[in-house]
Length: 384
Image 1 (cartoon, rainbow, N blue to C red):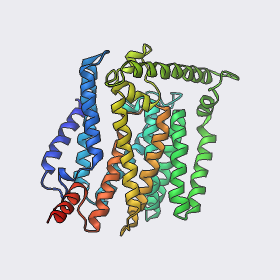
Image 2: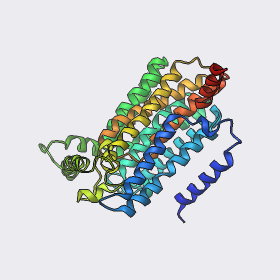
Image 3: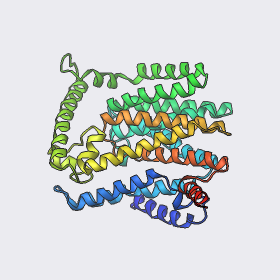
Image 4: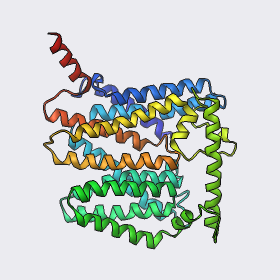
């Protein structure tokens, strides 16, 4: 069964049924929803003029467009901290379970390759899903409230970090370093929890010593000097290939700057069936420079939401905890995106949705109308 398409159908049905029943309406959608809509619309136009494969670009854009339905549905229905906590719990717990299954099934694979199908068959995609969910796991650990939950989330963190190291993904490791650093600044330093910094550092050291050899070999293989084993040889070949793909991406952007070559068409265009391992180049060459601008504006709104949230007085301390997790995840992604082809990874888009939801919840707790509705009320008042 095409489970992804079935899920998309139910998401659309859920969106339709939620209209008029939520405390929010379509008029309350923030600007980032419009940016995402325009981005997807430009991808559809790009597919119609694709010089590589029009039909493939259209079908892949149609598949990616589900993220807009999920995004709008999230904003419309997640109207309380309890609901936001629940959806973040499902996401984070699912990634922890997937990490455990990957470790169990991928024992015979050097990089957990093929441990799971779908988006998790690629070790880099699996690693990014883990990294982007780690700040939420730490947030749930801090809000556990019982010994059993604390031990459970500590074990989940250990499993997720272990799976991350076993993927031996260099880009995800850089993202991990940035994400954890920002997260510890929010939770450990600003939150005055020095024991958390020590605990996380201890987990990273232990896991690195236990299962970090493949990752170490791949990190050392950036230079051709001192290559000693097959892992390093393969990693150096991958490094050189990525340099060539980056050059090829710049050529594609120069040839097709306005509409690009179509979503997921670069692997064909490159001639070696590989994606360029820079997200910003990936989306620019496949969608054109206007799509790249919308992409950056979309994620910029996530940080704007968090800045507005920071300036507000909160009645719920959990909002600050979740805001720190979201900030850590977004910063980590934007840095890690320079080293991996993650333009169509859903988790970052959902993270921006969660920032919009968190800001809307904060406003509603203070008795304010959100988004466009608030602006319309002020305009009416001034006119009167």
